[in-house]
Each structure stands twice: as structure tokens, then as C-alpha cells.
Amino acid sequence: MVKSFSPNPEQLALLPGKSGCDINGLGEIDIRRPTPIYWHDPERIAHGELQAWFYRFGPAPEVRPIREETMKVMAAPLSEVASTKPDWTPEQWSENIKAAALEREADLVGIARVRPEWIFEGFEVKEKWIVVLGLAMDFDEICDAPGPRTQVEVQTQYGRGARASHKLASWLQEQGWAAKFHGGPRAGPMLIVPAGLEAGFGELGKHGSIINRQYGSSLRLAYVLTDAPLIADAPDNIGADGFCTSCQLCTRGCPVDAVSDTKEMVRGVEKWFIDFDKCILYFNENNGCAVCLAKCPWNKKGTAPRLAEKLTKRQSSN
Image 1: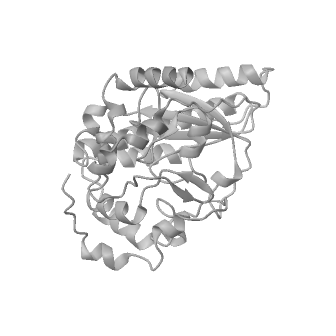
Image 2 (image 1 turned 135 degrees about the vertical axis):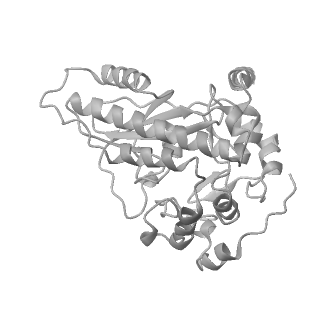
């Protein structure tokens, strides 16, 4: 893709003095909690004025009613917490909560124990468990990136994530356990991607999204927090990390060279990294992007299961 993007001067004038990569912890060798950077209350983030600019000029008209409906779901009350609880073992709770999630619009569900380094500075999460939900996107629609069809599909799946997490949290409260839910696109109190990785969703791709053995990287995420007695899932190594090392499609396809070709140290963890400062300006002016997901070979229909099986067998033989 030809890299010819020139940011709107209005955007450039709103950039804060501190780099988004620095806020994200690029180059830091110590593990720490993430700092809110975008999709939070504009008053508490350095890029608040830039985020406000995005909301003034976006999203596309087709997206507005979808986003408005999602916000209604996020504001809707949950079911009351029942006074009694089923006498289920942690194994039964885990099995039943997964079944309930899949019956309530989720395509994937996994469980992880909450880690302090996932919680944003200035936020508090007291619950022990996070139940991560995955919502698959239609790759044909993602291929329009960064066009309006992709914007509609992304927001549609965020809306489904809001409904699925709301329904699951209500179900948990009906079983006697308090629960909190969150669906995008606004950020919540904690990072979702690391939790999804820990909950067995797959591996982190070079483009910064999870690559799953069934759906590739064409996923949106939502979650529910609870203290119900659960059992954590194990991470799933599908060979995507090694695949991404040699694959160049999202690196070359990114219109602003924001996808790093090598791993970087970020808050004490070596991982694939997206240059926030390059990405966000293009994202804002196009009301979204997802070009990297459109380029990802894992997302072609029917590819992810076959590729994951091939790479998993290769790892086992080695």
C-alpha cells in the first residue's frame, strides 16, 4: 500500500506534548499498570482533545444509530442479585457460565484470573475472575477497511459484545453472584487483550490483535467480572507467533507504517507493538481502520482452523 497519508492540521494541533508510545510504556523494562490513553474520559487522558475531535467528526452516519443502541445497552440495569446460589463446584460453575455465554450471543468464551498489571492506573477491580467473550466479525465486511462497511461491522460486533456481556452478567446475578460487564468501543477499567490471551483465545498477532484458531484475528472482545468460583483456562499456543515473525502482510499493508516488524519491550513484556502516534491520526480521519485485519491471512474464510492445525502439528513434531 502506498504510504501517502498527510494528517489534518487540526489533529496535529491537538496532539499533547507527550508521545502516546511513551504513555503506553514503550521501552520500559519494569512491569506496571497501563496508563489510560484513549477511549476513556477525555478529562483524564493526555489525548483527550484529540479524542473529542474524533467524536465531533465521526463516526460515519451509518454507525451512529448502532453506537447509540450500544450505549443504551451499557446503561441498562442488570438483574437483581438473587439471595441464594446453586450448590455448584468450580468446575460446574465454569462449565455453566460458558454455556450461558454461548447461549447469549458470544462466539467464544474463556476464563482468567484478574492480574493487577491489566488494570488501568486510577481504576479499581476487586473481582477475582474475568470471563472474556469473543464476537466474530464477517471478514467480507472487514475487507472494505477502512470504509463504511467495515465501520458498520466493527460497531455491530461491539454492540453484540455489549449485549452478550450484559446478558451474562444478569445471568450471574440471577444465580446469586454479583457481576460487572463491559463491551466496547469505550475502554473499561482494564485491558482485555492480555486477559483474552490468558483465557485461551490464542496468541497476540503482529497487528496487536488476538489470533484465534477458529476465527483468526477477526474478533471483538467483551467481558464480565465476578467472584463466582471458577477455574482458569490455559493459554492456547497455535503457532501464530512464529507465523507472524515471517509474515509481512499487515506490516506492509498498514497505510502509516504503524505495525512494527520486530517485537518491542512494553511495560516489562516483550511483544508485538503498534505505534499509537502513527495509528491514531489515520484512525481518526477515517472513523476507524482495520486495514491490518483485512490483510491478515488468518482471516480468510476457512483458513484459521486449517492453519492452526498445521502449525500445532509442526510444533508437536519439533
